[in-house]
Amino acid sequence: MKRWYWIVAVLILMVATLVIVFGQRSTEQKSTDHKQATKQLKSEQKLAEISEDILQGLTPDGYTIKKWVKADINQDKRPDLVLACEAKDLKYDGEGFPPAKILVFADKNGRWQEIWNFQENIPHQGYVVGRNNISDKEPVLTVEDINKDGLVELIFSLTYYYGASGGTINTHIYNYQKDRFVSLLKKPLEHDRNGGVMIDDKKICLYSEKWSDGEASFDPHRYKTQVFHWDGKKYSQKQEFITQAKGDAGRKEVSQNFQRIVQGKPILVKKPAESELMADLYKDSTDIAIKADLKKRWKKAKSPQYILDDYDRRCFQSGQEDIRVLKMLEELTKNKGHILAVRVKSGHPKYDSMSRESDPGWQNISPHSTAQAFDIFYADGVEIGWQASKDGEVRYKAQKKIRQLMKEILEIGRRNSNLLPTQLCVYKQGDILAFSQEAQALYGGYPPDTGLRGMMVGDRYWDRIHVGY
Image 1: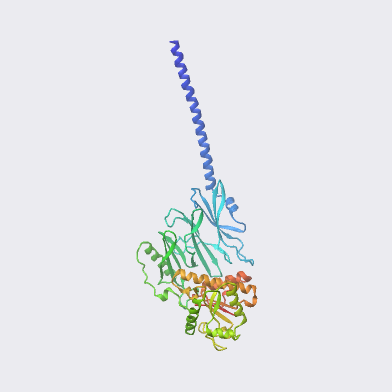
Image 2: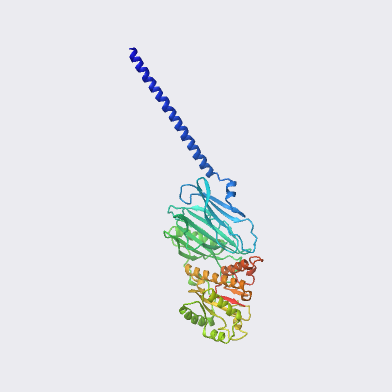
């Protein structure tokens, strides 16, 4: 019996020992798991709790944060940090104004590392701003999967002020694909300060004021509206309409019709006539034949040159042209490589010919009559008159070419003050403002809107760029 007692006692002792050993290991494992969980929680809390010191440390010198958001932008299942920054000092320094910046930081092993720095290279200050016209979806800075493809979009708006009442807002939409940020727009959504952007159900509504003849800056205006649809890769324009109402009622009409489009219903406005979709081009009966002749010659040209009609060629051969006109045309063609179709004196045979380009009631002698000016009708495969096209892509090509030429003319004038024109006109609000901004960037020292004085700032479209001395 004693023998069995000893055997049972040994077995009980062995079981007790095993229980104690495994219990200790279990306790140690739980303790280790708890420490790891606590460490992970603290790490997550560190990322979640974005302190003011962290934000200030990520902000570029001379900048302040307008807004910031936290979201997984690069799809690594860890939160990223997006900052919308603008310059503290808004004074012009002779080199241009510091642009607004959109900065994206990713968590790399517990440290914030910059993975994207977006800014638009412009000669004037960019402000990150938010607007709440009609819809709260007009973005300052937001992150949302607006096209429902599983990738979040980074949406932000940059506003550029160029005077007491002038301003242009560009809305951008990007997402992260294959280790890089990709724009989902063919070009930024540009609208004026009373316009805006609405986003709903894979569709985007862009609206901007459309001035009618005789309307002034503070008058209510109708709204030109464009609706873009997601095609799987980009947002493309599908619809366009102009409101019947003006001002607040016009903005309400935009909102109502956009919601009807989202719901698949027809809009409540009549289809506008062609004249409503396109602003009236400046028309001159004398110039129609001149333009037609120049267009034929321009289409045949293959190398950089300036193209004249027969009348202007005879004037140049006899030395009637102003030397500044000749030199500027040579700069634009021989040095800049453009193919230009231009009119100098043609259509203004008399020395004291009155200008046909001025508004009614403004009478002055045309500089064309003394060959001290030239008009560019066609440039490098682009018609200047395309700026009034209802086709967005065609209109964009004209705008881009217009602003390129205006910028180059100013730069040439900067290098050679004798070639700086006293007249550089295209009579469309956005292009005149661009001219004023370029002039300020090159020469500086005056308020941004000074260059607009004496110029038309309504949407009257010319079919030419006028350069005069």
